[in-house]
Image (tube, rainbow, N blue to C red):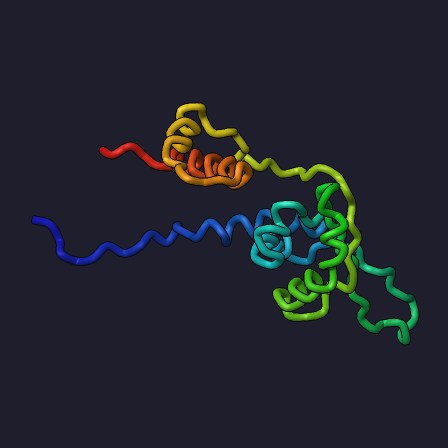
Length: 172
């Protein structure tokens, strides 16, 4: 006969986020990050579009003075690697990015951004690659376009229609 008592969760189970943070924090501390929040939540902090073209590299803290009078807090410089074509745009958005980081962390941790242009280290396997529509989809879309006098508009509608046709799944 089976017991009707609900099973107690195992005391060994822990959320993966707890284990990852504990493992990553010492590595990131060597790069100037006091905690892993900036790296782990980069996309949440700066938004999907900025995160797709940039990644935080390290925090550079200003040198601390030896005297007691020089013990006031000075914010760090966040070094960000950015895709070459996107550097100018991120430079214009630097104030907004700094504000978002400091809001996320809860204090004025970052005072300025330093941009390093170059390819991003992480792989972008989930980023869809452009591929032109198939010839069959173009033919099917062309057949549905009637009465459009403008050649440019007709070409644009055929391309759009071909992508829509390719995106449809066949009925089951």
